[in-house]
Structures are given as structure tokens and as C-alpha cells.
Image (tube, rainbow, N blue to C red):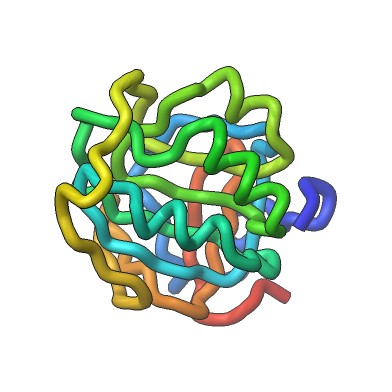
Length: 163
């Protein structure tokens, strides 16, 4: 979704008191400040192999939610992966961990949220990961197929697409 079609998170909270709202721990990266779409989940730790595989596939307007265990020791998404994600139709990426190549991410037409930027790359093959499972961080349970909307005010998760 483009920025113009993303419903405001404040309006979603007003209209849906049951909406899940992420704790305000994320920084904004990427060329889009607002994005919205169905969730795809990954659980990884300091190894971005599954992230790379995901963004190289069709995004179909989805938001990739990556539970990186909150690690601040390496970047799980960098410039090359942001290019792949934008090219393949991902609406955004939320990383409970770090990104790298912040300036390159800012040039891509994709929304990115992460805890911080960190220059060290991840080590592929270091740890296994899982795709498609519910992940929990920032006070929210993220489930495949539910909807995530993000803008300058924050990140919210709804069980169904916003009206």
C-alpha cells in the first residue's frame, strides 16, 4: 500500500479499542513512513538466511515481521535485502533487532521499522529459524494473516484488514 492509502494508526485505535499496539521501541527506516498489509512471520537469531529467502519471494503487499530476539549485535536487513523486498512487492518489514545500511534503506520505497542500526552483518548458517509461527515482542502477538499498519504514530495489529 502507498502512504496515501494507509489508515492512520490513531484512527484505527479510536475505531477498534481491541487493536494491539506495539510498545514505542522502534525507529523508522526505509523510504516509506507509513505502510500496511497482511503479516508474514519469521523467528531468527543473528542469522538472516530466512529473511533473505522471504524477501526474494513475492511479497504481495505483505509486511514481513521478523522476531530477531531483540539482538543488537548484527543487522538482519540491509540495503540489498531492502531492494529485493521493494522489488518483490513487500509493503514493509518490522525487525525486532537491527538493520544495517540505513542510508540505502531510506532510498527504497518500503517501510522498515527496527530497534536500531548496527553495521555488522549477520552470520548465515549460524542459527536455524522458523517461518509462519506466531511471534511475540513489543507487547504484541504477531500472527500470519493478521494485519499490521504503521505510521509516524506507531504500529498496530488487527485481526482483519482495516475498513
